[in-house]
Image 1 (cartoon, rainbow, N blue to C red):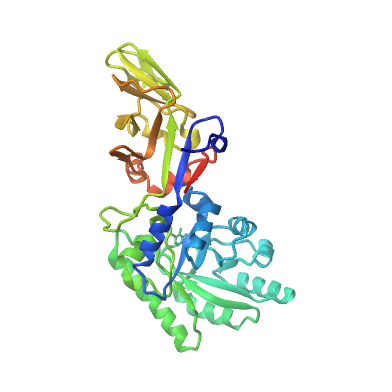
Image 2 (tube, rainbow, N blue to C red; image 1 turned 60 degrees about the horizontal axis):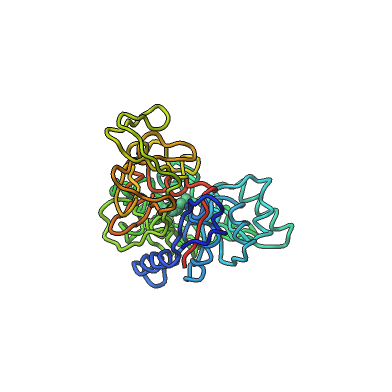
Length: 374
Ligand SMILES: *Cc1c(COP(=O)(O)O)cnc(C)c1O
């Protein structure tokens, strides 16, 4: 039971089970060769689960690297006392490189210009800076085009104060297109081999996101980079891997009343009662990141039953026709997670909402307090 002092005066909260996080991390690690290192991506507030508590538990569980999107996320980790190596997966403007040195963050490098700026700054500070080079083998996002990668690495290798610690690439559809992903792995392997032949050995070679890690054993290289599976979420259906969901989303009945048949509920009266019934109001809405397009569609768990949301989801409130059930004000309601024998998964909400599990958890707003168990 969450401590009321922690969640404030609106009984809506997310529970983050750090034991389950650790379970998933260990499960995933058991799929790797013993020497393969793990970077877990904790960008976007650890996929909505809370950057600091999640990262601390991962560090305690033996994660080798943390992956963030920006310098700002990296600084938050350092200020929380985390000493683990941190890779900034996204790019940084040249004018903003100083914190990389101040907070010991590892940048991603995709071109010579940026690498030289890092080298000059490092030289001036009398420091050396480890970098990871991003290679585009088919994602079409940041990264040096694979055919230009060899030349770029050679140039960066010659810089005095920049050390190439890692090289990495990313898969755009490992879940859907085996042939394309295999070809990316082939291109990346070839590049690493050519570099090796010319005397450049890069210790950290990484490519695999969650789906790559599970479905493509030859994509593990010397480090893997999962995010989603560590949070117990499935990048596609039918994966035979025992993951435990980490996040539950809960609220409490804040109001209940009886209304007659033919009564319109919420904006636009998109739901009309068919009979004399009871309508419950819940203190959560799209202002919390619960998708509005789940109106009249998603279920919530009340009294151990799956009941459909009735009418449009409002910014701060959601209504549910509970029929003959008589929940009391204060009863717990589950929007994501388990209640009795029933459960509602992030994957289920994502499918109904026409999106991916990532967007559901990342979207949960800062208005929802995260309560950590244990
Ligand atoms: C977010 C991210 C990952 C992790 O992806 P998942 O699908 O969550 O496992 C890996 N690599 C990069 C570059 C990323 O941005």
